[in-house]
Amino acid sequence: MKKGILPLLLLLILSFSTLLTGCNGSRNSVSESEDQVPVANNEALSNAEPFEITIRHTQVGDSKKFRLALLEEVVAKTEAEVPGLTIRLDAVDSEVNRKEKLRGEMAAGKPPEVFDVFGSPEAQLYAREGLMLDLSEILNALGLQDKFTTLASFTLDGKIYGLPIGGSIEGYFYNKDYFDQKGLSIPQTLDELDRLAEKIQADGKIPFAQASKDAWIPLMTTNNLWSYYAGPEITYGFMTGESQWNDERMVKAIAKHKEWVEKGYFKKGELGLEYADMRNQMITGEAIMMMDGSWANSVFRDPAQAGPMAGKIGFFNMPPLKKGDPVVVMQDANNGYGFSSAVADDPRKLAAVKSFIKNMWTEEMQLRGLKEDGVLPAIKMDLEQMKTTSDDALMQDIFTAVSEIELSFPAYDALVQAEVNTALSIGIQQIIGGEIEPAKMLEHIQAVQNAANALE
Image 1 (cartoon, rainbow, N blue to C red):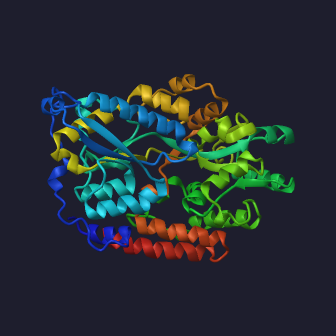
Image 2 (image 1 turned 135 degrees about the horizontal axis):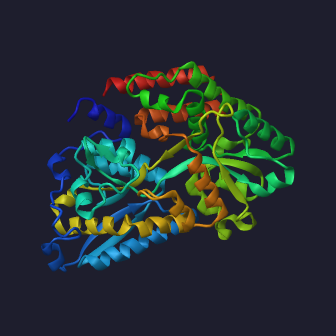
Image 3 (image 1 turned 60 degrees about the vertical axis):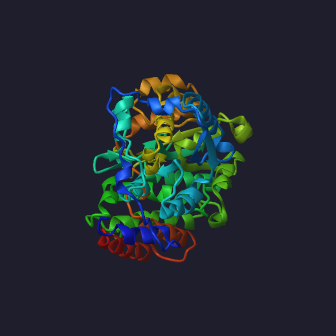
């Protein structure tokens, strides 16, 4: 075990005192040459005795019904290909899975065969403990090794331990009808965005829909702000000590978020509001703009969810500080599926995993995910091909936003340790609640960062 991994896991899992005993690191690699059958070996195909694997997914709720339908279709194909196979779908809320259930299962060394996971830091951490299946040979056998836009967050020491299901960017959804009625334009600088919010507030509307009970939601705004004020490269340096959280540019970024809170640009009581509440603020017309991931487009394109607001929502990138500065946007592919290393010990389960990968990561499924659910592809695809896949106006806005990106960065939680993420989450909620000043908040986060770095 590498120095610092056990203390890091203790901090990550919190309530679990016994970590990963009896894990066999040799189980996380699968050997298979490219000329072998990529889906299943002869033994697995000839044995029709019933067996089961579990797929833990987070496609919960009406907003994820389209991607659940795609998963169910892949499951049906996979069951048909592998004799005797039954796949049990285990649906769990994303935050519960990430921060509670999967951590506990990993601590016990017994994750499901297939599970929703974030590449960095979770998949990399679990892979170090031999709990994740190395997919390198499987991808080579299936001809997928060079097909992904990025596998960086799922890669450790040159081996691949998971696959992103799609890509995303973060930006502002906005009420196009309201903009048209009021003669408003998409802002080109952060000052213009500020003045736009002031006008909207003066008209009796909430400028920015927000719900901050879960800290990752307001941190989308904060992360994009600090990537403008301090530069997108700063987040890469926190774990190495090359960057400091209490950098004066970071203080300015947090102060800007605090200023927006104090000006009343977000709904009062946002700390008690859930993610769905934020979207409802847009759907009801109570709020006019909303910072969110591009994945949220499926809600606003679906009349059953968006009602009369369907087709009336647009999208634009957060603008730079000054006109002419590069457009900087959060863009990553950090969420997807991982596979238990224990699968390598069972040829039939391994065959099921190979079949699942073969059926899930195809150009057809990626384009369907784009068309039906608005998820940007995780595999390489020409922008023009994406544009012709969906003629929906909101999707076209998102494609335009992608084409405007000059500098991109992954979300902060892919680049910092779990305990730093926790400190940041507490800090931004304290900022929103008026309990702490930006400089003090960032000094505390830097102290947590220093302690986490010392364990590496």
